[in-house]
Length: 280
Image (cartoon, one colour):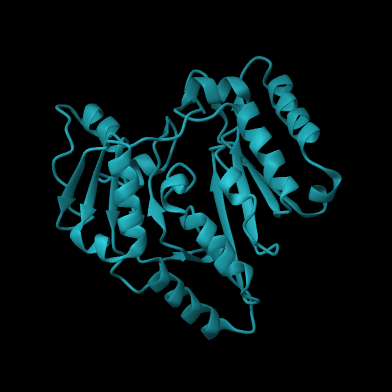
């Protein structure tokens, strides 16, 4: 699957006061992405769409670059102590994605460029809970991989937590563009998780995402880089031959994961008893 290229971008003017904001602006300009300005990343107007469906699709092709103003992080129980606010949404169009309702009228891809201020707040939370470990979730409202090649936010975050004894980071992705993260000094403090499914389920329901084999191959690369790994297989569909298809998924994983990666794996298997008729 190719890299996500925004069809248009909106910037808060203040985002250009930050080095990362200026760097993203320059990259998008070089890619000939039309750039507009907005007064707030929360109130973006000018995304086309005559129908609700068209507006949703166009928003998914829109990148918004802003400054995170709130100093408070949302809680993220039970998976982590806090959400780490790096970005929101993703360009994929999975038919059962909870973000379709969670983000409401704001399904556009949003990234925050004041990363040092976000890290400073994370430091405050870690110090308050020390000496206990504090976990931060980086994908509670997003898939952070598609915009990583433009922002480098995940790389910076992984290295930030890599040198914190009391901090741990985790995120999940359905995407496969992981090469830029393989050299990050994570020190085992980031759990890199992949959302997987049977090949036919991905093809039928997880639109604008890499295939099962592309994701499994990416997981093998991440395993080779020494990250703790996690996998989510969800939702599990029941259809003729489902056992064989999910078996092939596990066999593909088995073929990619080195022995060293298997001592610290997490698996989440979530079944809503969906069938191809939509009945539960």
